[in-house]
Image (cartoon, rainbow, N blue to C red; front, side, top):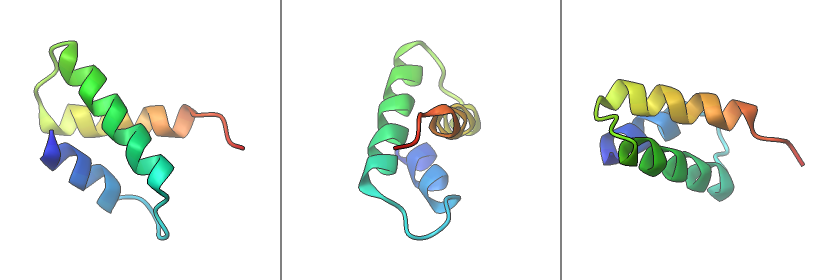
Length: 56
C-alpha cells in the first residue's frame, strides 16, 4: 500500500496538497480492504477517485 501511495503522489503535479495525499491514502486503504492487492490497480483507482472529487 505504501508503494501505491508513493507512486500516486509522485505522479501528481507540484505542489501536492496534504488533502490530496489524504484522499489518495483513504482510497488505497478502502480499495485494499475490498481485496485489491495489485499495486498498479491501487494507484490507478486512487488517482481516478481523486480526479472525481468535487473541487472547492
